[in-house]
Image: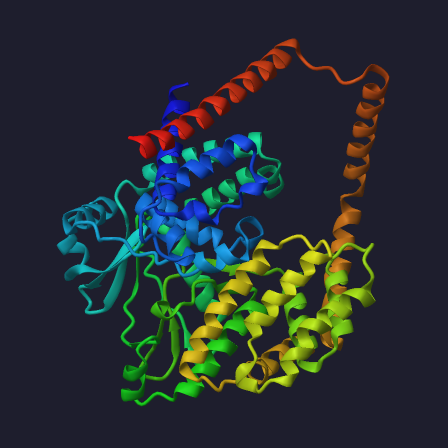
Length: 518
């Protein structure tokens, strides 16, 4: 009961801040139950004057609520199936920038991680150069003279996220209890996915592992590299990797002054991203200009491996074939790939789906190369697939959102860049290697290995199947039994949930009314 009261208070505060910043204007009241619609109307009465456009209202509210909600907003930007394309687009501009925490706390974390004074760990340890919701970065120098970047977790951030995630779970469960739309969107599942993501992101050893894997995948790429982590100094609360001396990709004049060829850099940005996504199935999912540098050798350097995306072989094949299909105007093949991947239910007609895809693809061939947006094509494609009951694929949505950012970065370097001509060599090379004769033989080898593995487990599988069939026969004769204590516990839990749900809605409504009338 006590924890429910705390979650209720935090949920009420979230509702008040959203209302005050004008974010409730983004909510469609028609999908809400009557009491919630009334709360939304009351909330609209306390909107702060000059709250700004819809693109800034929600971002302002989440920033005011603190680091957990900033991270939640960034996560929702990858889930247009939950918040809609418009809100997801607005949230993609949410800046994860927070005030730095004091140097004394940063030094204490370093000393606790290594059990010795900072001066024994680093020859020098500077002020923070960047600060975000989860961590901040310092520049330091090792005793052997190497310059390094030191990423340090915010003090108490795990406890804060734990409390805020508890309130988010409470709100999601409350919404699902009262709204069929919330149940359809599986709000509790969204919160749990965020919880898993944040749990991994708050162990900086895992980010070091991501950077290490990323570096291994790209070690043969002559125009791209990743900073190497220092495993001896990296701990759960701190990540140490090499300091990158280069020009930030957002500094166009600095790039020109350093003698870099901007159109070439634009091509490298696009082709590197596609290689990582299609060739490796492991890509940087936060490739904004602040995370990209150009070193003295002209190589693109990506930093901050906190948010990475993965694609399985099926998703990589799907991406490569649909991109090639649009390049060659083979819309029938694009449609077939969707069906072969199992993304579109078989009760739909391939020809009808190909016709819908043609509506996306044909307009781009009437435009000049610099007017064609690969990211926009994928966005329109995902919108059309919704008409054919294609379920949202989180990994593909993250890919599409990253491609929007990557394409924007490349366009700032070369406004005339032909995205499709730039992408074609990467796509064709992967398809030739993986879907050509050699690739077919490799697939056959993997399939044969899977069959042999299944055959070796056949006796054990038959024993387990016999046991399960016996249990089902017993259940069909005698029915499924449920312990009386379980029935009673279920009844008490349901009654308590309904009681707290009613109290929560009335308290939030009362707080909004008090804010309006008081």
